[in-house]
Length: 85
Image 1 (cartoon, rainbow, N blue to C red):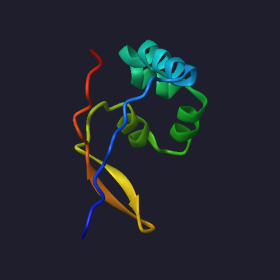
Image 2: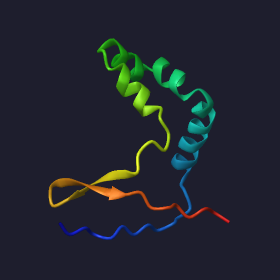
Image 3: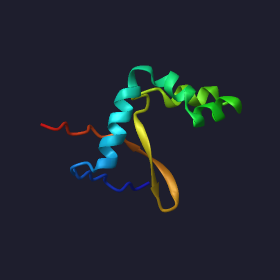
Image 4: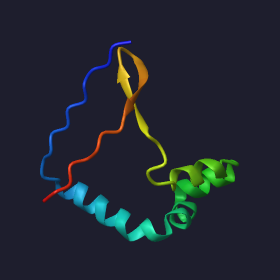
């Protein structure tokens, strides 16, 4: 199966991205508890999806991400992200 090369362009984040990053950094230390206590987490827990909430709190747990190609998802490797200097 042919894969399309992943090209990442580094751009300056907008205000929404900065706000989201700040919110994540605030929750990161207690991420599982934060996810369990939010409205969506509560809905998942009520539906018996405890494992999904726990998985969502697992950082850097996967070595690939899904990519949509030709109407189907394929596994794409996670590239090393360039670190800002």
